Amino acid sequence: MHDERGFTLIELLVVIAIMGILASIIFNSIRKAREFALIGKAKAELEQIRRTVFMLEVDANEWPGHKAVGTIEGGAGNNEIWDLTVPEAGLVATDGNFDGWKGPYITAPMKDPWGNHYFFDTDYDIDSSGAQKWAAVVGSFGPNGEGQNVYDSDDIIEILAE
Image 1: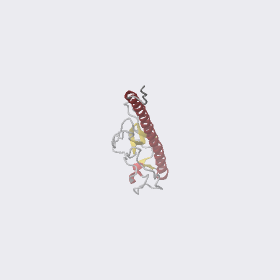
Image 2: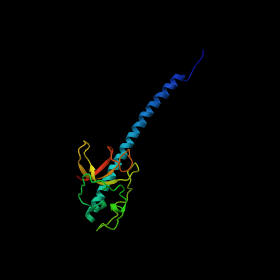
Image 3: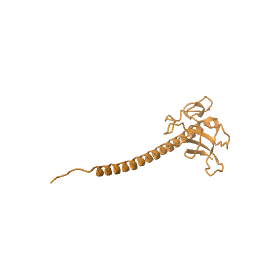
Image 4: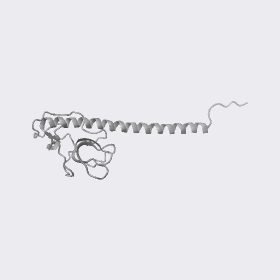
């Protein structure tokens, strides 16, 4: 009599294949959960930036870039501030032209979770149907980053006025 103990090669390969499938499912779920967490972080930071714009508005009666409060420049172009840490934005430092400036209004990092600067735009098209509906927003270029200065469908925005 021959007593064999252990697993056959086929049994081991089946177990390894099952473990591989389960691992890929888990890693995919973790990746999606991480992406949702980063989007949530960006939304929270944009809400904070919106509040800092409001503080600038109360103190200096201006928005970043010395825009009049409530300004919406439908399709104007070249009115964006791509980096909210510049003095012209008035949130972290001043260029000396914000009367009543009492900042800095924010000291948190001014880059989104994907490493891009948050932006301010007074002619952001918030209508995804193809019609144009302009708004003043602070935003992030979202998970795909799409480089700086390029808007697309995964942008995350906080509307200041529409």
